[in-house]
Picture 1 (tube, rainbow, N blue to C red):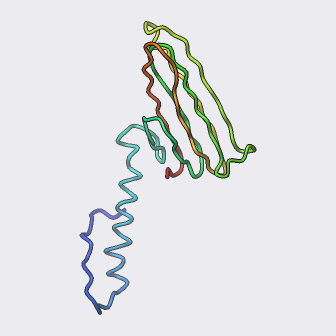
Picture 2 (cartoon, rainbow, N blue to C red):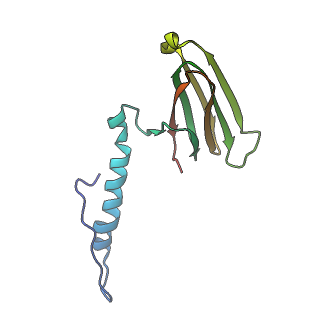
Picture 3 (cartoon, rainbow, N blue to C red):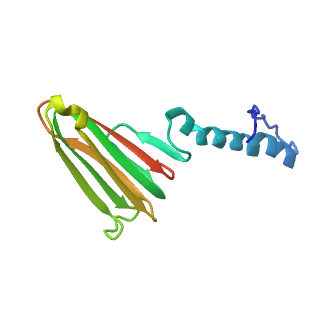
Length: 147
């Protein structure tokens, strides 16, 4: 890992660019950025190459690898996680739903976990539905890249 960030150079018209210049201003800075992105695991306590993608509802693309979804909440709620392959192919697609019916006094047990693997990549689509005292938080972790 490159220890320090090099301020990018301002190139001038007609300047001869050498390999050492490109290495210092492009390659080394890209290595520095990657090393700091990979170190995010130390910030949030997850394993190496494991990233918290979101705590919001929506769609998240996992190019390759593994994703896991967990949800917690109080009141009555339903949490659904559906996985679709890169091409929407039912062979790789997998849909799962979790239904929790606890009162708000039991909210500490109101937890659901879903996981899936894919060789081709997939999209995680998260939604919650319910009524009454619903308050649901959804977390997505993924191995691979998010787009």
